[in-house]
Image (cartoon, rainbow, N blue to C red):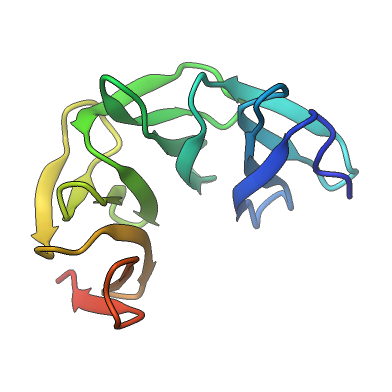
Length: 168
């Protein structure tokens, strides 16, 4: 499949297991920058255009939501939209370097790493529901994943590869 169809490069991706669609971040200096979807039949569709390249990406197919982070000046943000790209809203402003997103669809929670503040935020699906959840001093937090009751995250400046803690 040609993911360079929008004259851009694909970045992070996430799979919708219910439809087989692949949602991905697209970045380019002269092409499309934002979030796109590739359907099972090979059709590409631009969903959301952004001025800055999104960093993290997650979906909740049961609720029909798409979540992503953007690093930009003056304010980096966490956003949510419908999976067709409509009804985009900012869930959290004033993030530093938001990188990864983990999603807990059973609890309707998101976990977002901020590499500038070394904080993991826990957020609901609604505006202004984010709280500081975990801090790892001197760690430039990158990606984060949830498996069962454990969050696993990486920090690009630490010698250890993965850190974890129980969310219960």
